[in-house]
Structure formats: C-alpha cells, structure tokens
Image 1 (tube, rainbow, N blue to C red):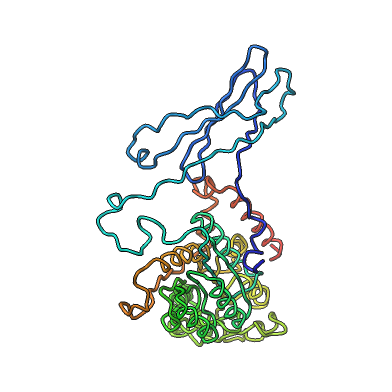
Image 2 (tube, helix red, strand yellow):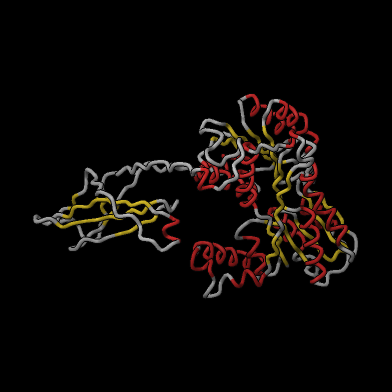
Length: 446
C-alpha cells in the first residue's frame, strides 16, 4: 500500500446496504433520512399487528434537485421494501434497540445529460455528454512529503473523497525523495495511466520522467510546489497555493503589527521550490529588516538551530508548516516573548489554539483540502481537454492559484459565539478546539 493511502486507510469504507435499527413503542414511528448525495430520500414505516407485534419496512423516493429549486412536489414514495427479519415482538424488552436484517437498495445510474441540456457548445473529446474514460482507466497522483505532516493527511483525505465521488481508479503515492517520485511516475506510465498529477518540489529531478510520460501520450498536470516549472515539464495546468502571495501577505501582517528588525523564515524541507518562493517574496515585500532563512531539515537539533538564529535583531518569525510552528513556539515563546510568531498552516485545531493563547500572532491558511479536490478535478479535465500544451495553442500551463487566508485570534474567538455557524453545524470541531485550548493553556503555564 502506498504511503499516501496508509495515512487514511482507517477511514476507508464501502456502503453495501442499509441496516435499519429501531426502538418502537406502542405506536408506529416514521423517520425520513436524506442520502449524502441528495439523490434519494428514505423513510422507515411501521405498523402494529393484531397479535401485538410491530412490522417495519423501508420506502424510498428519488429527489429531483431542480424540482426542489423550483418548489415543485417530489415524486411519490415507492413500494415498501420488507427485510426478512422485520417483526418486533409485542413483549420485546423496553428501551433496547433492535435491528432488522439488511436491506440492499439498488439504484440506477442517472443517464448523462443530452447536448440540448448542456447547451449548444460541445467539443469532441471533452467530458460533456459522456466521460472519456471508464472505471478501469488509471489516474495517478504523486506527491513529495512525509506522513507526519498533517497538511498531506488532508490532501490525501480529499483525494480519497474525490476518488469516491468521481468513481475513478485513482492511485495516490507519497515519496520523501525526488528520485523515488520520478520512479513512481515511470511505473504509472508502464501501468497504462491515462493522466498523472504530481507535485514539483524537485522539478529538475522529475523532468526526465515527466518528459517520458508526455512522449508516451500520458496527460500531465502538476500541483502544490513548482508553479514556475509547470510549463517546462509539460504540465497542462498547475494547482497551487500562490507562494508569492504567502510572502507578501506575511510581510503585510508583520507591518500591521509594527514589527521591526529581522524576520526568520523557517524552512522544513531540504528541496522545495515552493517554500523558497515564500521566503523570496517575504524578503522582497518586507522593508523592516532582513529575512533570514533557517533550514531545520538537516539539523541535528531543530530547537537549538531556531534558538541560535533568534538574535536581538530579530523581531518576527514565520514557520512554513504546522509541525515547524510547534518547534518555533517551543524554542522562542518563553525565551523571546517579544518576537511576533506566525505560521502557514491548514491544521485544525492546535494552531488555532496557539492563536487563541497568543503564542501565534496570525496564521496564513494554506487550504490543503482545496488543493486535493481541485487537483483531482484538474486531473480529469486534463485528461479530456482537446487543448493540451502539446498542441501549441497555449504556450504555458494554465495556473490555478489559491490565495492564502489570514486567520487571527479574533476569528478563533468568533467561533465560540452563540450564533457561530460552525458551532451549530460542526459541534465536534468546537469540542476539539476547546480541548486544544485547554492543553495549550496547560503547556504555556497559564
């Protein structure tokens, strides 16, 4: 099993049927349940028999989203589906849950829309009327990174969701070394992949393998690091956080907090062009002092390395991922409380708890989930587009850029407001954040 899927193997599941669990009193009870895809509604029906038993069954009806939007009535309920074990004895134990046998609900795949429904513009080869691939078509996503990085956990979680939603054969693999990632690309080509998506942390190392893929007729898209190298490696499109915007936004946030003096830009990976771009942009945009790059990937003692760079001239520091933010805060919060600390992160809830406590001044949200979802969509689009870069119509890879979002302590506090949307829709997230804040307070000695 690849390193990418290992992170989320525990979340994998397949829905094979519906087990109806009921507790029924003297009168029958109805229940309506909407499927996650919003394509059907299911309800439990029950009746009490003359001998005191209760019989249960299931009914379904399709949901027409367009009809809902237009306020039209939904179709009627279908025939009752009766599980084999569907009777509850009249003398059944009170307050005990009973389960019927499994009821498998068969659903027909919706017919593809017609050209008339789509509109007058149809290009042969694009996924409009029908998909230009089947369930056996292999798609590959290959990334750099380490399993301990929560950013990549989120990316691979999004890839898994997108694989299910699109019903595609998606292979996702993670590599710590560029040479191994290049070999992974070659294996995908040998296995007949229709399209490949890859990160470009080390574009020079991956270039030969990607050229071989293009020569073999495999469509290539890229994402995350390496936007400036996308065209050179033959990528049709590149999905990424706007790395230059990360540096510019960080510089502006430090200015708003009246930071003066040098800034530490802490880099956690030995070879990653995207991280270097963040520091480059910060250096160009910040005029209060120098930007000092602290490289901890090869350091024997990361804490000592960070501490050693925190001279009296340093007024701020930014970590470029969540794991590094913890090290940075541990190294500097107590010894140099005057230094303004920030992080680039997409992790929940610990960095937000650090914001709440004041150990971090701001976080630039890096949108890991969005990168995973958009990469899969771009991969499928890249497979179907009639205009890959090889046609010569477009001289450069399409750039799909995501801007970082600034998160502050005030935004975290707003999540606890009584009318907070997240409190109502994701109460478990609020619970997790509250626990993280308590742990953060204990760690900081408050």
